[in-house]
Length: 455
Image (cartoon, rainbow, N blue to C red; front, side, top):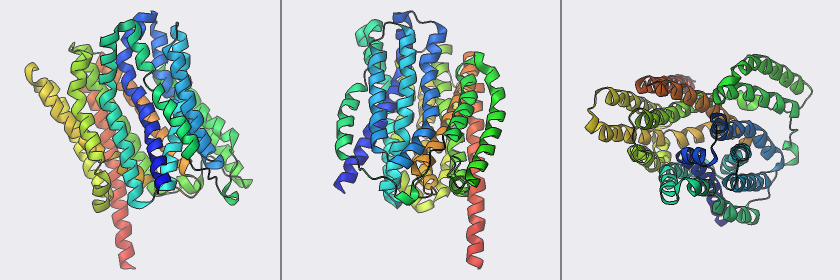
């Protein structure tokens, strides 16, 4: 029990390290740009490159963790993440920062499937949901303090040194986490009968398809890459069928993708994650770019969302334990209403009351999200077959990363053209799709339960 507790604490520390970096960087970008005289292209790579390599690393690292154990992948991912942070924080040229951020994204994408895979393997039932709830709380805390700490460092140290300290902020956590993980993480590997081949051609085709899909949304001049997605997906499916016929284990694991509960939960998470992230971005951009609010003022207005998320994540396991997937549907309805209410506030509230009313809608939306994320993760990953916990977590996160990239790119363009309501409408559409997916799954489960009772 003591080793499990220490292992969970280290997993949460790793999650906090990577999520704090994401939440604090945005406040440092203007200072970084001024200090290094970085052009628009360099800033795009610094901001978007992280998400790109994060998404590309997820599935290969999840598959490697399932096949060869998670300990050393976890250690290597944290070490790469923190070493790259040192390179970025001490760089003299913008292109060096951009290259280091690409490596940081790969490190974070290597760590996260191991974290969720370890939780999946060490805990079951309510304990698993509570562990995933703790993971969500850590994300909420990082979301709360990241912008505030980043803004505080920029304000205290100035542009020249503030952004460097923001990028170096996660290094102390890595210096503590790596040696402790070497000491405490379990050495367990899959049983010989469960060892699987890595399916390197499948991984390469999946990575290429993901790259072609995400790159146009992170780099607008790469729109032509989208044309390659259908061809690469068709080649991937054809290869995977051939690979399975040869008696090997394909990356598109039939036992995983054939689980309706896993497919439904992943679909819900995909639309919900993109909707929630793009809604937060829409409000932040509108307050700063269109209304001229300071970063600190906008951050304080969004603070109730992060607080609500962190607080409700701590009880999400109890709610889902009592009500099951129905509670996720109700929380999704609430999150959708909160976004619609935000649109009404932006359109109707007088300027003097805009901040307080937005804080209310953000609190409700954040609280609802806290009741969705970890319970849906627990219910979804419970359908992972033995030996595929890392792969299941990786596909779940990859779907979320694609949704977030597409959603935030679309919302940013609309809001920067002056339409905050239009940006939030896109977010509401994504959340409505999540509601529809949850409703269909709830209806299917109810029908299945009725048939079982009639037998």
